[in-house]
Amino acid sequence: MELVKSLKQSKIIKYAFLALLGSIILAVSSKIKIPFYPVPMTMQTLAVLVIGVLFGWKLGIATIILYLFEGIIGLPVFAGTPEKGIGLIYFTGPTMGYLIGFIPAVFFSGLLRVDFKYNLFVRFILNFALYSFSVSFIYIFGLIWLNNFVQADQLLAFGALPFLPAEILKISILSVVVTLLNKETLSWRSFR
Image (tube, rainbow, N blue to C red):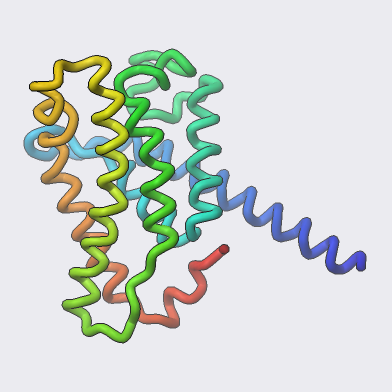
């Protein structure tokens, strides 16, 4: 009985450590700005997808919630913090919808898997579709919330279109990497 209790505690500690590590990776990825056209690209949406792929949906959601909590209580983990403000005031600003959209994005990227029975090309296409679907929730939630700050006729021009080329690039890179990994390599990734 003590062994079972000890193993459960060990598992909880491992998951807490992984969630903390994931939240740090998200914070760092939000600060990386790569020159790109038409706007600089951060690695944050890629990090969200990778967390889903590596951690699975349960631990992925826990990681995103921890990250959001860290930002809400005032840690400068969000893109643009601390220079544009911190805490709840920053969180409830124009980017809140995008941040909330991380939750369904990590859920779907962590839940859905492409079967290895398909050839590489088909797996790439399916992975690309899966990650595009997952990222779409970031933009759907983001645009719905951004509508409170931007006129409806300018919503896509400000809230989505400038970011699409970078998203396509990031999704393509992740799709290639996941497609090229074999079943045995990916078997360790499930922390569910």
